[in-house]
Length: 389
Image (tube, rainbow, N blue to C red; front, side, top):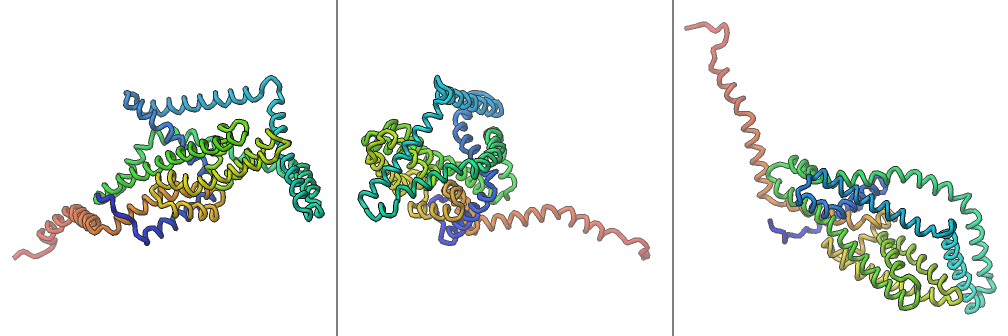
């Protein structure tokens, strides 16, 4: 098969249109899409160790079960250890820590407003600091009454859905190969080889995406940690890692990561807001490198998509489906690209279409052989009541 063939403008128009349509569908079925995504991620994480167990002589069912049990047992122990460590000797230690960082963030906003009033007298005449403080006070006083119920209902709604992820992971590991065979059996024989190639490429595209995402996370963590360490922010490596993971959701995750970095920096130096300003500058610089250098070189290259298409599709995904579109547009584009290019080659390949038509004629001729013989035999038999000569 010629892997050097590239899709034309018509095929790429269909690829982009199908990706946008899938984003809209996923946005409406988010309760199922998120467990499916988490299950897929865990599947690719555990697939390598499971395959090593299979090569060592274990059955596929046993290997899949053991890998899922071990992974979730280790994850549960790590979560329990983190909660125990965070609680410390005092029951409310984590509450004090959160309160301390929130106070640092509020102090940063207050110092920034005061600095702006000193630099720009017109802002002092507008009483900018008192206006912002009043808005903060109003929001925090009414937050529990207006939003706490919605948050609790949302959490209660999503918890049962997210519990599907472990079950999906297990069945992806155990029955993934069986599902591929099931799909391949439904394809006409003339397109069988191309179908096997399509299934293989879809699987490899998803794997390349997650590998590229891990490379991007490592790059973001290293560069951001170096910048925060240079300006003197505490725990730069941990902050870099958390911000890099949050950046898996473009734009929205970047805003959350920037707020986290600023809060920590302002808490470390409450009397020197320029440390927090330096942290903002470092974060913005890393995000620019991430969006226009790191992401095209990692995710874009992993999916074999042109950097311009990668950046444009991120904006399109955000405009169509919000946060969900930002997070899913690249993997969906990669999978749809493989399917679209393969189908385009199938439709435009006269040899394959001729083989398919010939196979249909042979199948029809074979199915009607006994019918033709029966018809000839009935024609030779004398009709009842016919006079004998």
